[in-house]
Amino acid sequence: MTGNKITVAQIGCGYWGPNLLRNFSAQKDCQVKFVAETSAERRAYIVSNFPKSTPVDNIDVIFNDPEVTAVIIATPAASHFDLARQALAAGKHVFVEKPLATNTAAADELIRIAAENSKILMAGHTFLYNAAVRYAKKLVDEEALGQIYYIYSQRLNLGQVRADVNAWWNLAPHDVSILLYWMNDTLPVSVSAHGISYIQPGIEDVVFANLTWASGVTAHIHVSWLDPGRVRKMSIVGSRKMVVYDDISDDKIAILDKGVDRVPKAGQNMDYDNFNNFQIFHRMGDVLLPRIDFQEPLKVEAAHFLDCLRNQGQPITGPKHARDVVAVLEAGGRSLREGAPVSL
Image (cartoon, rainbow, N blue to C red; front, side):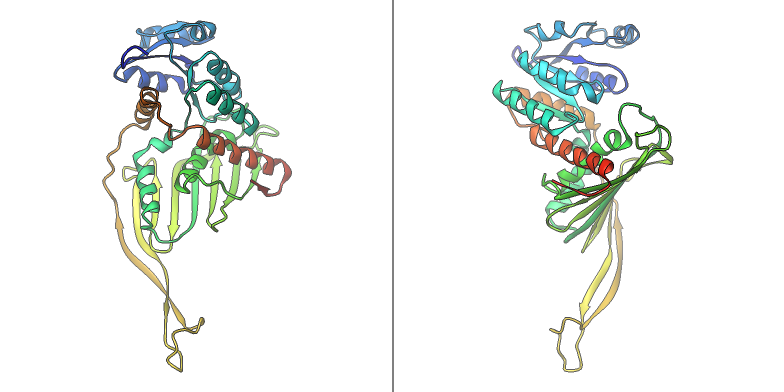
């Protein structure tokens, strides 16, 4: 780091890597010096589209360069642990795409190495940098929705079918990250998941999962890459109001003043205290579509990581959050295998 200018390097420029490279390259006072790629075709792509970055085929070039302050890891999930471990051991700060690791033991090891070397470790849980997700969080924190009853999410598409991970590990990290954020980074007490493999044996294409918190709040997650329509929606059902967050809608947040109210009524003895003396009313109020000051979440995420480097700040999606996401995913994966709920 020279003055305010930060020199970083990126490992991987495949499916998601170009988005990260574009956003980090566009940040003021940030230089992406190297991009490591084993594919000659992808290195040619970097030369054509990001001429200020030098493509290399050897990650040691990155680890051995003293100018490189931080490493961005945008490779398949199975490689995250090893690459992040090497980068931290080389004295680099690390931004690693989600998930941080494929199990909590590996996540704990990365957290330990980062702490021992006084390095920042951040995971790319992009949706926590989404203005609509943050707006919903504000409503929850201010108790504008009343008591939270339950939350449900759908992340569906007729999309890319993976052979290395199932739909749970591929799609659910987004929803788990958002749920933990809304629940003040409190882990659920149990996770129960059921999935079905249609295309490839042992790799679930659709997964239904239930998360339960000690407070009584429950959440249902439905992920699939075999669905006919593209859905990216989460709903929070509260005692006072409800919120629908629809990531592919122009109106990303809808606040619904509707619900079911239990209103006391007088008994024969004009007694309001009798538990059974109440009436049920359905409340159908207004629907508010608030204006969201939306910026590309990846841009906000990249800026946040660089700001943490400059000021030694703690990332929103730092070690604890990243580790908790892995813990929930790991519990869900175990539940899929064992066919029973798993306690955390």
